[in-house]
Amino acid sequence: MIFILKKMKFIKQFGLTTILFLSICTLIQAQEFHAKAVLDSNQILIGDQIHVDFTVTAPQNSNFIVPAITQEVLSANGIDLVSGSATDTTLNGQLVSYHQQWTITAFDSGAYVFPAIPVLSPDSQLLAQSQPLPFFVNTVAVDTTAAIRDIKGIAKVPLTFKEILPYLLITLAAAAVIALLIWFILKHERKNKPQKKVVKKAKPKEKPDITALKELEKLKLKKLWQSGQVKQYYSELTDIIRTYIDGRYDINAMEMITADILKELDDAGLPHKLHQELEQTLTTADLVKFAKMEPLPDDHDRCFKQAVEFVRETADQGSGGRDQGADKTESY
Picture 1 (cartoon, helix red, strand yellow):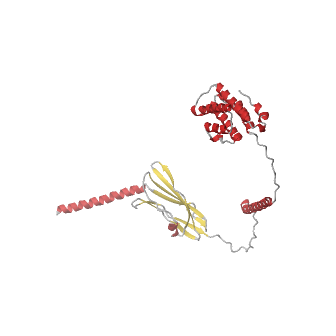
Picture 2 (picture 1 turned 90 degrees about the horizontal axis):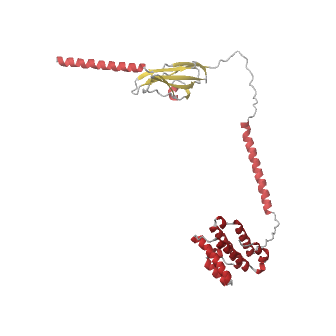
Picture 3 (picture 1 turned 120 degrees about the horizontal axis):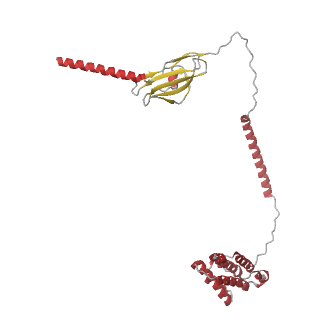
């Protein structure tokens, strides 16, 4: 029995010691937190605004809670919240200061109190608290002994560009619409107005042999094979010949192979000698373009001469080709 009583006494003393220790720890922790709120004025007129500067000083990396200051909180005290700033943080040694500012006002005369703001631990223990801030809202003093004055007339204020701008834009838009209508009417009248038909004289079409001889002369002046462009030389040479055959004999030579071209020309009565020379020129060109053959310089000159001779010998005698352009093209 005595043992049980001693054990209960020990538990009681231990519990009291634990509670006292936790209270002292909480008190020490609370002493490290400070909360301060300051008004920039305690006397204002109705509708004027004052600022509340709130500062919390706390140890670094500490956790605490400050209830939000909202319109609902201040409405209980008859105060209107105008705005609130973001929280600024300042490091000072082992302590951190958190600063926030609110702008408040009131629209009725009388005495008001901005409420105290508590600083709580995560488990809702009070760590610090600011003081309540009383202030007074006064009405505008009216001198009742002064004479009543007439209402002032309307003051003339000069127009600004911002006020004139809408009317200026409307005027410009209306001018643009009118100009567009005038342009549309004039265009419509011009379109419906009968116009004189201008008859252009058809330019006489150049004979195929003259065109071919001119193109051969241009090809000669390019000196393609002399500069190593052999394939390009034979491509242009055969294009000139094929275009001439198309215009002279109405044979679609550009879309035909060499054998088909020669067959069509034989049917058109091409002399055997010209047939052999043309076949030699076109075959050489095919071997250069498709088989990468490297002809000798004499072959280049021979093919050019054969092309010129083919055009001259087959030219339409009625075209006057020999008199107008044939003699202008010479061999290399």
